[in-house]
Structures are given as C-alpha cells and as structure tokens.
Image (cartoon, rainbow, N blue to C red; front, side):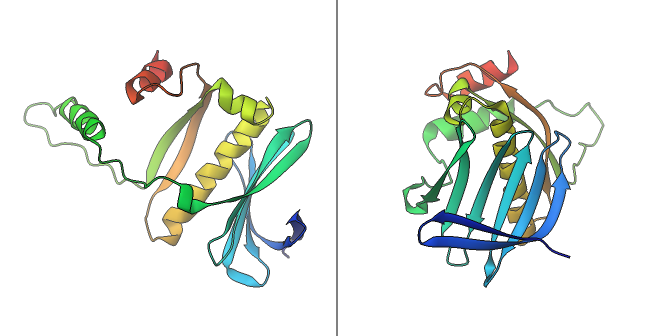
Length: 193
C-alpha cells in the first residue's frame, strides 16, 4: 500500500504526495520518492536524516518548490525561478583550458597495454561543502546530509527518466574551508589538501 502525505507550502499551494519508493543510503539518510496526486507528470523527493529533512517538489508544468531547514526546527519553502539559473554549459576560455589541462595530465596506459574501459553505470561521488552552506541550513550537519541525499536522488532520477544508464553513488561527504568566490583550482586544492 502507498502512503499519502499532504503538504501545504503556501496559502494557495497544497500538494498531496503518494509514496512511490523508499531507500536508505549508505550514509543513513532515508530518501522517499513521491508522485503527485492529480499531476501524473509531477513528482517529489524528500530526504531525511537524524533530525532534518529536505525536499523538492516538481509539477508537470515545470514549477519547482524546495523545502529547506531554516534552523530551530523550522523549515522554509520557496518556489524556484529556473529562468534566473545560469546556462548549464560553461564554454569560457578558462573552463576549456582547464578541461584540456586535465585531459593532457591523464596518465598514459603502460606500453603495449590497452586502456581500461569503464562501463560508466556508476559514478562515485564525493561532496564537499563550506561553512557558509552549513550556516545557510541553520548550522545543522544533518540538514546538509539531507540536502546531499536529495540532490543525488534527483540526479539519479533525471538519468533514469532520460534513459541514461548511469547512477551516482555517494561515497563521502566532508566540510572544507575555502573562499567560495575563489577559482576552481583553489576549491580543488582545499578538497585534496
């Protein structure tokens, strides 16, 4: 049997969610995927850890709502305006030069051996976050873990819906200290030591 949950985000915004699947991640988060009652194209994903939960609701007409911890046991709901998001691809000269430097620095296969081919069905991911991310979630590390679990689940759902035969596998999370306005190389140095 499925479980229905009603969530009223705003005075004029009520959703009835029907549980579709439930998963417990290796990091201990419970991630629940829902369909939207009376909106077969919509869906939701919520992830919960010890004392915090994060969720995203997407309607069939592409409205997106996010529920995030605000601290003190409270949560905030917001409708995301995707028109204000930057384009996904970064074709700037700096980005392309960095990609070229990473490719050229890749180790060569030993003489006479064929390169190893990876099926790509699983991508192991480490997620690092800054103190400002923790602060934006009310200073609660469980909220960060819930947000990360939600993002992984949403990404895997997107892959599946698009017919992409791959999935992200979260292997580690950690807080790092670096200036978020710094270039990518500084972020990589902060994460790798």
